[in-house]
Length: 319
Image (cartoon, rainbow, N blue to C red; front, side):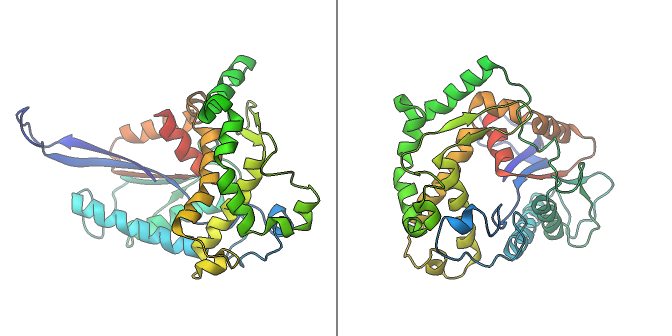
């Protein structure tokens, strides 16, 4: 979540006062969807890169899981109690027209997340989930696509990404993930996979990284980091879905630090593609305009915008 809570000063206080009193005036929430199934299903990279069988997901590929729906309802309830405690919402609030807005990208996982959140936030009110694109397509507001690219821009943006790896650049970023990728390969027993042994997925420890920046498309890359991210992403969601942590790790005993190390691959991938300053202000621009509009909308008390991790990463970096 990224939350902007705006308050108005209740009364003037001397400059040397310990803490002025404020009244919460409005809240804008930018949320990623909750727990989903992997973006790809059986017969894909995930099915070939490990000899193990994955968790039997409770939803179709890329869709919100049953557990994700439960957790998002709880998140809505948490926000309801907070807003009641702050005095922004009365108990069992039934909003006046345009006071509360729910707006989601047109994907199942984002629409469903907004629906579950609204049920927890406003359990006795009729709520509408706005969507402004054809179902299962990317709404331009939430689409983290590059709106402007030239050769000079691409060169400078790639340089900013590479700076995360220090003097070694992109190779330095990859080197920093060696332990995490090795652990991921061990947990999934990747070396026992015929597809991996055949070289179908390259070498996750030695192959190089190429950044792809094209106007109208999301920033992308061709690299072992991208492949490892797909596997680490699925393994993390398997951990969230299964009660047995050892079973979620295909029989391996992993500590919390091990799980965090595996997920650091996903975090690094997101940082590389969406958090470089030149990229973040580019891809986040439509959503930043939407957030600004919500912060100034007359009569608005609460806004919930539901997108993806790329949205949260780029918006926070741009701000």
